[in-house]
Length: 196
Image (tube, rainbow, N blue to C red):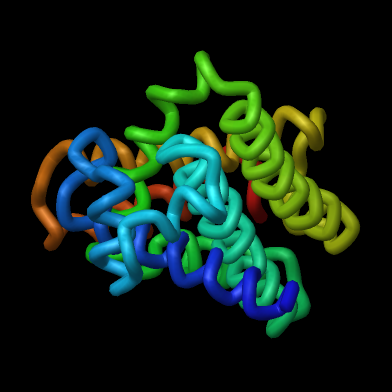
C-alpha cells in the first residue's frame, strides 16, 4: 500500500510541475493539479495538506533530481577541469529546461521567507551545490590546476556565478544566448579558481 501511495504522490507532484509550467505558481489550484494528474478533485487533499505542501514536495523532488543528475555527470570523468565542465553541462542543460526551472524557482523563492519547509528545501539545495563546488575546488588544488585561498568561499561563489549567469540569460529573453552564457560562466569560474 505504501508503494501505491508514494506512486500517487509522485503522480500529483509531476502534475503540479506541468500545471505550474503552463500557468505559473500563482494561478495553479488543487483542482488544476487533479486535472493534470487525471484524478478526482479530492485526491490532492488526501495526500497533501494544501497547495503549498504540494509545491514544497515538488521543489524537494526537483532539486534532488537536479543534484543527482549533476553528481552522475561528474562521476563520469576524473579530473577537476573535466568535473567542472560536466557540472556546467548539466547545469546549463538546455534553454527550455533552464527557463522552466528558473521561472518556477523564482516563484518558489518568493515563498521561502514565509515557510520553514521551503527554507529547509532551499538550504539543502544550496548545500548540495556547495558540496559539488568544494569537491571540484579541492580536487583541482590537489591536481595543481586551481589556486584558491579559501575553498568554501570559492565553492559558494561558483554557484553565485552560475545562478547570476542563468538569471541574466533568463531576463534577456533570448534563447540564442544560452551557450554564450554557459561559456562565459565557465570562463569566469576558471578565473575565480586561478586556473593554470
